[in-house]
Length: 394
Image 1: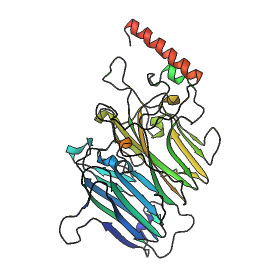
Image 2: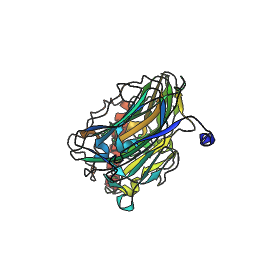
Image 3: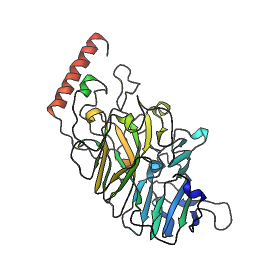
Image 4: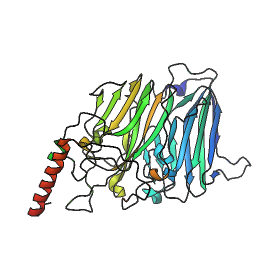
């Protein structure tokens, strides 16, 4: 049970890698020049990383998307963790805010709340076992000097982990924007609700893994690009997308099928301003003029798979909305894992306050073929919109 190890005496040896000033001074940080990669920890095992703390400074407001975190286990060539620094710690859009969950926390001072590129104390408490080695590194993809403070706390043990131990993984994904069949159509309307979705082929992908392991959750960042027709300074609701999790290559329907975006994140009737142990919002849209980051962790109910797992979520019901989505999925699995990369720096950058996509920041479009049902729904919406406009009720 949770915390049971606190009263058990074990032969594990507790150690730490940190950025402390080895000369005895107070310059307790590492500087990374533009383009530089630094190895924060290179540990010989067997052992387990138990806690990571980081804080940092960089004048680039996008640095939390431009600094890349990688982790490698047992000498593997492909990283098992590959994500922008902020998103790994559940802070999307290169924005900072204080929040508390069981696996991750962030702490900022009052002046920094909901600030692009602000300073934050970041913590991760997820256990990360390894048998032969662990390597943690960061790369500075900004044009500025980056200053990194860090602790990486770990334990060493005499015997390797058994075959039932799995390795920690985290993967970043982003679509800017998602490909939707009717972005002009609002959610929870008769038009959008009338389109049937019996496949995950056009969903936003959270994770595609191969091997044996367990999916333990994800964070999701959304920038809603749809404005209200009558009040264009207001945003609509971006949700109603069902999550779908297919286990071991199973056919439709999946083992886990959800009922809407907020439900997938264990909330209801939209998102709320809260941050609980296993679900909540680290960044809340009403406080940020539309930027949202939410998280959900399956710590009591991990999704177990033996061959493969495919997890995704609709962007609006039936994938009709074209908004900006980004995410980090977290899971444990036996090695080897299915290799994955990360988008180029420009294609990771957040949208600016006007929600404009800067040149070069759009991701490659995801092909989507409109069905006759979708085409008919778009025509019906256009007719309804014209009717409301003529009556002055739009």
